[in-house]
Length: 84
Image (tube, rainbow, N blue to C red):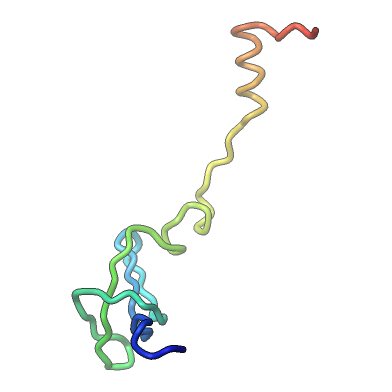
């Protein structure tokens, strides 16, 4: 890589505010605050609103929409469309 044009890439802790879950990874993001990690070292921390620990798709709490029922309800309410 060409020196001087790329952002610094290093260890960062991402902390999920919704679930209280944190994980250590590498990123170019830098947080304003720092946190002491399990290994005793201090890392910059980035607070995120949602992650795989709190997202409904990953936690299994996602709702499946009943699209067939919605279409039938629409057809009952407004009638079927006439074929041409």
